Length: 244
Ligand SMILES: NC(=O)c1ccc[n+]([C@@H]2O[C@H](COP(=O)([O-])OP(=O)(O)OC[C@H]3O[C@@H](n4cnc5c(N)ncnc54)[C@H](OP(=O)(O)O)[C@@H]3O)[C@@H](O)[C@H]2O)c1
Image: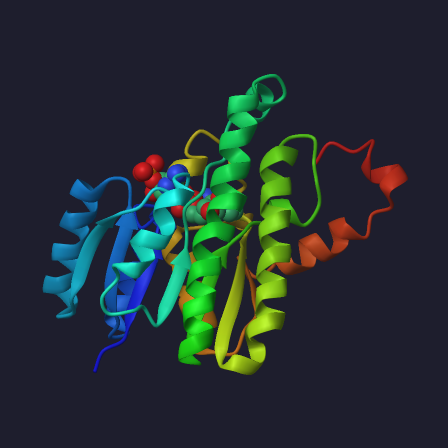
């Protein structure tokens, strides 16, 4: 019998590319997000192209009260869960508007903690499955340009690390994805360096390969692992004066 993967924030460009990889790999899919109309079209398309079953579901990461009911209604229970939702937000606005920093923190961090905790408890009981959390290299070190977003992703990376530590003996795998730059809706207004920027399809392939193999933490593109290793080791007294 085919296994089912729940993709949260399934309308994200990276998630849409990953959905195609998972469908081609033979998984049935729950495509969850706020734009159910668009997700239903994606679900139909994947069903036809890959002869799998796909269903669109409404999910709002910010509405954490709805998460237990949302997860309870999933039938069948997912074998894998991918948290792909996120907002970059407006860092300058977040300096003066609490609503902006709350949206950034609550979407990228609290929303993930809420839904992935539910998934983790169910998978721990089942004794199998995988959880993928899409964090960011922005969480590896705080920078002036995006430290509210970066701090939410740092929290998410630490959460996923702890979850992996908790679940590793129960047969449930937890994968942390740390994209550098990816050309998606989120970054469409940014001038990205081409050698360091992945397409959503490239990032999706890296994520799918990490699911198939035994990877815990995956950087995409791969060179970001080394770039961030270097950046993390710059002494704070130098780093604080840099604008990178
Ligand atoms: N692109 C990059 O360079 C980059 C780099 C590092 C990390 N990431 C991370 O990678 C993940 C995927 O991002 P992407 O680049 O593919 O971005 P994207 O295309 O802009 O997609 C973001 C998705 O998040 C969804 N979302 C936002 N708030 C939500 C909420 N409250 N509830 C449910 N869904 C919500 C959006 O849904 P709506 O359509 O409903 O708004 C959208 O589908 C994100 O976690 C992002 O932080 C991206």
